[in-house]
Image 1 (cartoon, one colour):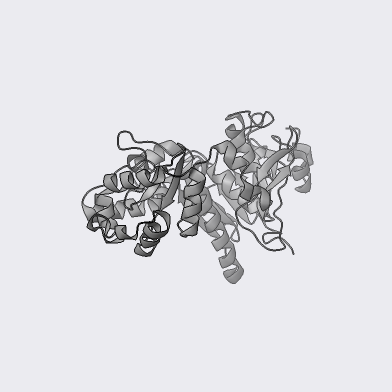
Image 2 (cartoon, rainbow, N blue to C red):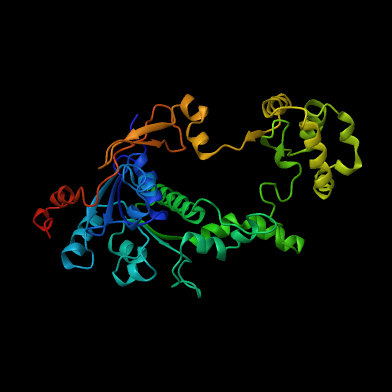
Length: 385
Protein backbone atom coordinates (compact mmCIF):
# COMPACT_ATOMS: atom_id res chain seq x y z
CA UNK A 1 0.00 0.00 0.00
CA UNK A 2 1.38 3.43 -0.90
CA UNK A 3 1.96 5.96 1.83
CA UNK A 4 -0.92 8.42 2.37
CA UNK A 5 1.16 11.54 1.70
CA UNK A 6 3.34 10.25 -1.13
CA UNK A 7 3.87 12.97 -3.74
CA UNK A 8 3.40 15.85 -1.29
CA UNK A 9 6.36 18.22 -1.07
CA UNK A 10 6.78 20.22 2.14
CA UNK A 11 9.20 23.11 2.62
CA UNK A 12 9.66 24.05 6.26
CA UNK A 13 11.59 27.06 7.53
CA UNK A 14 11.67 25.72 11.03
CA UNK A 15 13.46 25.57 14.34
CA UNK A 16 12.98 24.07 17.81
CA UNK A 17 9.85 21.98 18.29
CA UNK A 18 6.41 23.10 17.01
CA UNK A 19 7.09 23.35 13.27
CA UNK A 20 9.62 20.47 13.14
CA UNK A 21 7.19 18.17 14.96
CA UNK A 22 4.41 18.96 12.48
CA UNK A 23 6.63 18.44 9.44
CA UNK A 24 8.10 15.22 10.87
CA UNK A 25 4.63 13.74 11.11
CA UNK A 26 4.09 14.65 7.46
CA UNK A 27 7.41 12.99 6.61
CA UNK A 28 6.45 9.86 8.55
CA UNK A 29 3.58 9.24 6.17
CA UNK A 30 5.33 9.82 2.89
CA UNK A 31 5.64 13.57 2.32
CA UNK A 32 8.99 14.80 1.10
CA UNK A 33 10.04 17.34 3.73
CA UNK A 34 12.80 19.81 2.90
CA UNK A 35 14.03 21.49 6.06
CA UNK A 36 15.62 24.91 5.55
CA UNK A 37 18.40 25.56 8.07
CA UNK A 38 20.93 28.29 8.72
CA UNK A 39 24.31 27.48 7.17
CA UNK A 40 26.76 26.31 9.81
CA UNK A 41 24.97 25.49 13.07
CA UNK A 42 21.52 24.95 11.57
CA UNK A 43 18.43 24.58 13.75
CA UNK A 44 19.42 25.71 17.26
CA UNK A 45 17.58 22.66 18.63
CA UNK A 46 20.54 20.59 17.41
CA UNK A 47 22.50 21.85 20.42
CA UNK A 48 19.90 21.45 23.18
CA UNK A 49 21.83 18.41 24.38
CA UNK A 50 24.18 15.79 22.94
CA UNK A 51 22.95 12.61 24.61
CA UNK A 52 21.97 10.51 21.58
CA UNK A 53 25.30 9.51 20.04
CA UNK A 54 26.33 13.14 20.31
CA UNK A 55 23.03 14.43 18.92
CA UNK A 56 20.20 16.33 20.60
CA UNK A 57 17.39 14.11 21.86
CA UNK A 58 14.79 16.70 20.90
CA UNK A 59 16.27 17.17 17.43
CA UNK A 60 16.30 13.41 16.81
CA UNK A 61 12.67 13.22 17.96
CA UNK A 62 11.41 15.92 15.57
CA UNK A 63 13.61 15.64 12.47
CA UNK A 64 13.89 12.13 11.09
CA UNK A 65 13.03 11.44 7.45
CA UNK A 66 13.82 15.00 6.31
CA UNK A 67 16.23 16.55 3.83
CA UNK A 68 18.32 19.41 5.22
CA UNK A 69 19.11 22.33 2.92
CA UNK A 70 21.32 25.09 4.30
CA UNK A 71 20.32 28.51 2.93
CA UNK A 72 20.91 32.09 3.99
CA UNK A 73 17.49 33.34 2.94
CA UNK A 74 18.50 36.96 3.52
CA UNK A 75 20.86 36.84 0.53
CA UNK A 76 19.57 37.11 -3.05
CA UNK A 77 20.91 33.64 -3.84
CA UNK A 78 19.27 32.08 -0.79
CA UNK A 79 15.97 33.82 -1.44
CA UNK A 80 16.02 32.71 -5.09
CA UNK A 81 16.63 29.10 -4.08
CA UNK A 82 13.85 29.20 -1.48
CA UNK A 83 11.33 30.58 -3.97
CA UNK A 84 12.39 28.01 -6.52
CA UNK A 85 11.51 25.39 -3.93
CA UNK A 86 8.21 27.06 -3.08
CA UNK A 87 7.18 27.18 -6.72
CA UNK A 88 7.00 23.39 -6.70
CA UNK A 89 5.88 22.87 -3.11
CA UNK A 90 2.52 21.79 -1.77
CA UNK A 91 3.06 22.95 1.81
CA UNK A 92 5.13 25.64 3.52
CA UNK A 93 5.48 25.94 7.29
CA UNK A 94 7.46 28.62 9.14
CA UNK A 95 7.97 29.58 12.77
CA UNK A 96 10.38 32.50 12.52
CA UNK A 97 10.51 35.22 15.19
CA UNK A 98 7.51 37.60 15.30
CA UNK A 99 7.37 39.78 12.19
CA UNK A 100 10.39 38.20 10.49
CA UNK A 101 8.44 36.22 7.88
CA UNK A 102 6.34 39.26 6.95
CA UNK A 103 9.46 41.40 6.45
CA UNK A 104 10.90 38.74 4.15
CA UNK A 105 7.66 38.27 2.21
CA UNK A 106 7.39 34.73 3.55
CA UNK A 107 4.19 35.04 5.58
CA UNK A 108 1.41 32.65 4.62
CA UNK A 109 -0.94 35.21 3.07
CA UNK A 110 1.77 36.70 0.82
CA UNK A 111 2.97 33.30 -0.34
CA UNK A 112 -0.49 31.93 -1.16
CA UNK A 113 -1.19 35.05 -3.19
CA UNK A 114 2.02 34.37 -5.14
CA UNK A 115 1.56 30.56 -5.32
CA UNK A 116 -2.22 29.97 -5.37
CA UNK A 117 -2.10 26.19 -4.80
CA UNK A 118 0.29 26.45 -1.85
CA UNK A 119 -0.81 25.57 1.68
CA UNK A 120 1.11 27.90 3.98
CA UNK A 121 1.12 28.05 7.77
CA UNK A 122 2.48 30.74 10.07
CA UNK A 123 3.35 29.48 13.54
CA UNK A 124 3.77 32.13 16.22
CA UNK A 125 3.61 32.62 19.96
CA UNK A 126 0.40 34.62 20.26
CA UNK A 127 -1.10 34.88 16.77
CA UNK A 128 -1.60 37.91 14.54
CA UNK A 129 -3.28 40.96 16.03
CA UNK A 130 -3.72 41.88 19.66
CA UNK A 131 -1.24 43.38 22.12
CA UNK A 132 0.91 40.23 22.29
CA UNK A 133 1.32 39.63 18.55
CA UNK A 134 4.95 40.81 18.50
CA UNK A 135 5.91 39.21 21.80
CA UNK A 136 8.46 36.40 21.70
CA UNK A 137 7.20 33.18 23.19
CA UNK A 138 8.68 29.91 24.39
CA UNK A 139 6.91 26.86 25.72
CA UNK A 140 7.24 27.52 29.46
CA UNK A 141 6.25 31.17 29.02
CA UNK A 142 3.05 30.21 27.23
CA UNK A 143 2.33 27.58 29.89
CA UNK A 144 2.47 30.51 32.33
CA UNK A 145 0.42 32.99 30.28
CA UNK A 146 -2.29 30.42 29.55
CA UNK A 147 -2.83 29.61 33.22
CA UNK A 148 -1.60 26.04 32.90
CA UNK A 149 1.15 26.44 35.50
CA UNK A 150 -1.41 27.83 37.94
CA UNK A 151 -3.43 24.60 37.88
CA UNK A 152 -0.50 22.19 37.71
CA UNK A 153 1.60 20.99 40.63
CA UNK A 154 0.88 20.47 44.30
CA UNK A 155 -1.27 22.53 46.64
CA UNK A 156 1.89 24.19 47.94
CA UNK A 157 3.72 24.85 44.68
CA UNK A 158 2.74 25.32 41.02
CA UNK A 159 4.78 23.47 38.41
CA UNK A 160 5.34 23.50 34.68
CA UNK A 161 4.70 20.37 32.66
CA UNK A 162 7.76 18.18 32.17
CA UNK A 163 7.03 18.13 28.42
CA UNK A 164 6.91 21.05 25.99
CA UNK A 165 3.13 20.79 25.78
CA UNK A 166 2.54 24.22 24.18
CA UNK A 167 4.95 23.32 21.38
CA UNK A 168 3.53 19.82 21.02
CA UNK A 169 -0.06 21.04 20.89
CA UNK A 170 0.91 23.66 18.30
CA UNK A 171 2.71 21.10 16.17
CA UNK A 172 -0.29 18.79 16.19
CA UNK A 173 -2.77 21.57 15.35
CA UNK A 174 -0.45 22.62 12.52
CA UNK A 175 -0.52 19.04 11.24
CA UNK A 176 -4.31 19.05 11.48
CA UNK A 177 -4.50 22.33 9.57
CA UNK A 178 -2.22 21.09 6.80
CA UNK A 179 -4.22 17.89 6.33
CA UNK A 180 -7.54 19.79 6.25
CA UNK A 181 -6.12 22.25 3.72
CA UNK A 182 -4.82 19.43 1.51
CA UNK A 183 -8.26 17.87 1.55
CA UNK A 184 -9.88 21.19 0.70
CA UNK A 185 -7.45 21.73 -2.18
CA UNK A 186 -8.48 18.38 -3.63
CA UNK A 187 -12.01 19.74 -3.94
CA UNK A 188 -11.33 23.36 -4.87
CA UNK A 189 -7.84 23.43 -6.40
CA UNK A 190 -7.02 26.38 -4.15
CA UNK A 191 -4.32 26.71 -1.52
CA UNK A 192 -4.85 28.00 2.01
CA UNK A 193 -3.07 30.45 4.28
CA UNK A 194 -3.58 29.74 7.96
CA UNK A 195 -1.93 30.31 11.31
CA UNK A 196 -1.49 28.41 14.55
CA UNK A 197 -0.13 29.92 17.74
CA UNK A 198 1.19 28.43 20.94
CA UNK A 199 -1.24 30.55 22.96
CA UNK A 200 -4.29 29.56 20.89
CA UNK A 201 -3.29 25.92 21.17
CA UNK A 202 -3.06 26.14 24.95
CA UNK A 203 -6.31 28.12 25.04
CA UNK A 204 -8.03 25.07 23.56
CA UNK A 205 -6.34 22.77 26.07
CA UNK A 206 -7.27 25.10 28.94
CA UNK A 207 -10.97 25.21 28.03
CA UNK A 208 -12.11 22.80 30.74
CA UNK A 209 -10.26 24.53 33.63
CA UNK A 210 -11.43 27.91 32.34
CA UNK A 211 -15.06 26.81 32.03
CA UNK A 212 -14.94 25.17 35.47
CA UNK A 213 -13.45 28.29 37.05
CA UNK A 214 -15.92 30.66 35.43
CA UNK A 215 -18.86 28.38 36.25
CA UNK A 216 -17.84 27.63 39.83
CA UNK A 217 -16.58 31.11 40.63
CA UNK A 218 -13.33 29.62 41.93
CA UNK A 219 -10.35 28.02 40.21
CA UNK A 220 -9.52 24.35 40.16
CA UNK A 221 -7.29 23.53 43.10
CA UNK A 222 -3.88 22.14 42.34
CA UNK A 223 -4.03 18.51 43.37
CA UNK A 224 -0.61 17.05 42.58
CA UNK A 225 -1.03 13.46 41.42
CA UNK A 226 -4.69 13.36 42.42
CA UNK A 227 -7.58 14.34 40.18
CA UNK A 228 -8.91 17.81 40.96
CA UNK A 229 -12.60 16.88 40.70
CA UNK A 230 -12.88 13.07 40.97
CA UNK A 231 -12.33 10.76 43.97
CA UNK A 232 -10.87 8.26 44.44
CA UNK A 233 -8.44 8.98 41.61
CA UNK A 234 -4.69 9.07 42.12
CA UNK A 235 -1.87 7.44 44.10
CA UNK A 236 -2.37 4.89 46.88
CA UNK A 237 0.27 3.13 48.97
CA UNK A 238 0.21 -0.66 49.28
CA UNK A 239 1.49 -3.07 51.90
CA UNK A 240 4.92 -3.51 50.27
CA UNK A 241 5.56 0.26 50.33
CA UNK A 242 4.86 0.70 46.61
CA UNK A 243 2.49 3.26 45.17
CA UNK A 244 -0.15 2.34 42.59
CA UNK A 245 -2.71 4.49 40.80
CA UNK A 246 -6.34 3.94 39.95
CA UNK A 247 -9.43 6.00 39.16
CA UNK A 248 -13.18 5.63 39.68
CA UNK A 249 -15.24 7.26 36.92
CA UNK A 250 -18.83 6.37 37.85
CA UNK A 251 -21.06 4.71 40.45
CA UNK A 252 -20.96 1.33 38.73
CA UNK A 253 -17.18 1.32 39.11
CA UNK A 254 -17.47 2.50 42.72
CA UNK A 255 -19.73 -0.43 43.54
CA UNK A 256 -17.35 -2.87 41.85
CA UNK A 257 -14.40 -1.36 43.68
CA UNK A 258 -16.08 -1.71 47.06
CA UNK A 259 -17.33 -5.24 46.49
CA UNK A 260 -14.52 -6.84 44.49
CA UNK A 261 -11.40 -4.91 45.50
CA UNK A 262 -12.11 -3.96 49.11
CA UNK A 263 -14.47 -6.85 49.80
CA UNK A 264 -16.90 -4.54 51.60
CA UNK A 265 -20.09 -3.82 49.63
CA UNK A 266 -21.52 -1.91 52.63
CA UNK A 267 -19.33 1.06 51.69
CA UNK A 268 -21.57 1.70 48.68
CA UNK A 269 -24.30 2.91 51.05
CA UNK A 270 -22.01 4.94 53.32
CA UNK A 271 -23.41 8.50 53.03
CA UNK A 272 -19.89 9.97 53.15
CA UNK A 273 -19.04 8.26 49.88
CA UNK A 274 -22.40 8.18 48.05
CA UNK A 275 -21.67 9.95 44.75
CA UNK A 276 -18.54 11.66 43.56
CA UNK A 277 -19.27 15.07 45.17
CA UNK A 278 -19.44 13.40 48.62
CA UNK A 279 -16.34 11.32 47.97
CA UNK A 280 -14.48 14.45 46.88
CA UNK A 281 -15.63 16.36 49.98
CA UNK A 282 -14.52 13.49 52.23
CA UNK A 283 -11.41 12.54 50.29
CA UNK A 284 -8.99 12.42 53.29
CA UNK A 285 -11.21 9.89 55.10
CA UNK A 286 -11.78 7.92 51.90
CA UNK A 287 -8.09 7.68 51.05
CA UNK A 288 -7.18 6.69 54.61
CA UNK A 289 -9.77 3.92 54.50
CA UNK A 290 -8.52 2.63 51.14
CA UNK A 291 -4.87 2.64 52.17
CA UNK A 292 -5.73 0.85 55.41
CA UNK A 293 -7.29 -1.97 53.34
CA UNK A 294 -4.43 -1.94 50.80
CA UNK A 295 -1.89 -2.34 53.63
CA UNK A 296 -2.72 -6.05 53.75
CA UNK A 297 -1.69 -6.62 50.11
CA UNK A 298 1.32 -6.12 47.88
CA UNK A 299 1.14 -3.83 44.88
CA UNK A 300 0.83 -6.85 42.57
CA UNK A 301 -2.10 -8.15 44.60
CA UNK A 302 -3.86 -4.77 44.59
CA UNK A 303 -3.40 -4.38 40.83
CA UNK A 304 -4.75 -7.91 40.28
CA UNK A 305 -7.84 -7.06 42.37
CA UNK A 306 -8.34 -3.82 40.42
CA UNK A 307 -8.08 -5.70 37.13
CA UNK A 308 -10.59 -8.28 38.38
CA UNK A 309 -13.00 -5.44 39.18
CA UNK A 310 -12.41 -3.79 35.77
CA UNK A 311 -11.02 -0.69 37.47
CA UNK A 312 -8.44 1.23 35.40
CA UNK A 313 -5.06 1.23 37.14
CA UNK A 314 -1.34 1.76 36.60
CA UNK A 315 2.09 1.64 38.15
CA UNK A 316 4.15 4.82 38.31
CA UNK A 317 6.99 3.82 36.00
CA UNK A 318 10.29 5.59 35.73
CA UNK A 319 11.33 6.74 32.26
CA UNK A 320 13.72 3.79 32.15
CA UNK A 321 10.85 1.42 32.93
CA UNK A 322 8.70 3.08 30.27
CA UNK A 323 11.44 2.74 27.63
CA UNK A 324 11.59 -0.99 28.42
CA UNK A 325 7.79 -1.35 28.67
CA UNK A 326 6.54 -4.80 27.65
CA UNK A 327 3.73 -3.23 25.61
CA UNK A 328 6.24 -1.41 23.39
CA UNK A 329 8.29 -4.56 22.87
CA UNK A 330 5.33 -6.89 22.30
CA UNK A 331 3.80 -4.62 19.66
CA UNK A 332 7.07 -3.75 17.95
CA UNK A 333 6.60 -0.02 18.49
CA UNK A 334 10.21 1.05 17.89
CA UNK A 335 12.55 1.19 14.92
CA UNK A 336 16.20 1.96 14.25
CA UNK A 337 16.93 5.03 12.11
CA UNK A 338 20.22 6.27 10.73
CA UNK A 339 21.93 9.55 11.59
CA UNK A 340 25.25 11.28 10.93
CA UNK A 341 26.44 9.77 14.22
CA UNK A 342 25.22 6.23 13.67
CA UNK A 343 22.00 4.25 14.25
CA UNK A 344 19.42 5.44 16.80
CA UNK A 345 16.45 3.65 18.33
CA UNK A 346 13.23 5.68 18.12
CA UNK A 347 9.51 5.11 18.62
CA UNK A 348 6.95 4.75 15.84
CA UNK A 349 4.31 7.45 15.32
CA UNK A 350 1.07 6.85 17.20
CA UNK A 351 -1.13 6.12 14.17
CA UNK A 352 -1.21 2.47 13.08
CA UNK A 353 -2.44 1.69 9.57
CA UNK A 354 -2.70 -1.96 8.52
CA UNK A 355 -0.28 -2.66 5.70
CA UNK A 356 1.37 0.76 5.87
CA UNK A 357 4.81 1.27 7.39
CA UNK A 358 5.84 4.87 8.16
CA UNK A 359 9.03 6.13 6.52
CA UNK A 360 11.34 6.26 9.57
CA UNK A 361 14.20 7.73 7.54
CA UNK A 362 17.51 9.14 8.70
CA UNK A 363 18.09 12.23 10.82
CA UNK A 364 19.98 14.65 8.51
CA UNK A 365 23.18 16.58 9.06
CA UNK A 366 23.06 20.35 8.56
CA UNK A 367 22.93 21.01 4.81
CA UNK A 368 23.34 17.34 3.96
CA UNK A 369 21.02 17.63 0.96
CA UNK A 370 21.79 21.18 -0.18
CA UNK A 371 23.76 20.24 -3.29
CA UNK A 372 21.28 17.57 -4.37
CA UNK A 373 18.19 19.74 -3.92
CA UNK A 374 19.72 22.79 -5.63
CA UNK A 375 20.80 20.59 -8.54
CA UNK A 376 17.18 19.49 -8.94
CA UNK A 377 16.21 23.16 -9.18
CA UNK A 378 18.91 23.90 -11.77
CA UNK A 379 20.85 25.92 -9.19
CA UNK A 380 23.77 23.57 -8.70
CA UNK A 381 26.26 26.38 -9.19
CA UNK A 382 24.82 28.10 -6.09
CA UNK A 383 25.51 25.22 -3.71
CA UNK A 384 29.05 26.31 -2.93
CA UNK A 385 27.81 29.77 -1.96
